[in-house]
Image (cartoon, rainbow, N blue to C red; front, top):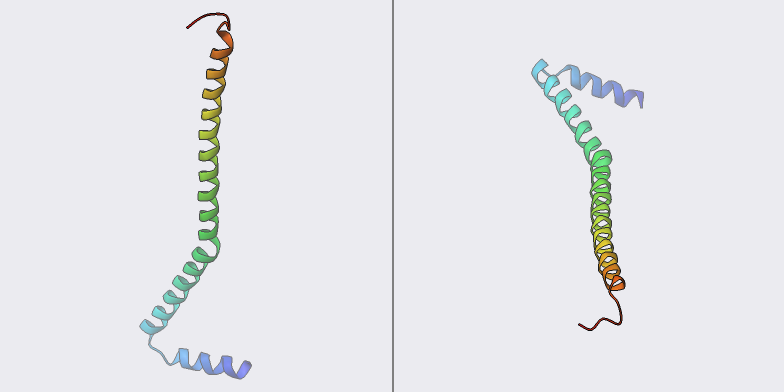
Amino acid sequence: MKIIWCEWQQRFSGLSSREQWLIAISGWIAIILIGVFMVLEPQWILLQNQTNTIDVAAKNIITVEHDIQRLQQKLAQSPNKKN
């Protein structure tokens, strides 16, 4: 392993300064993209799913509240009253 590391180090040292910077910047960009796709994207998807679940629950609550109001109005009417 040490031999391989020394070989890569010699190859890297043989590159120009510009090429070394390009490799370094490319490496950081790769690390950032891996972080985004492995860590942030799954969390983003989970957040979207939870937001959708909350929206559906809120709409269901509104529907149930309207049903309750309608039923309370029907209960408030006298059954003996003719329409």
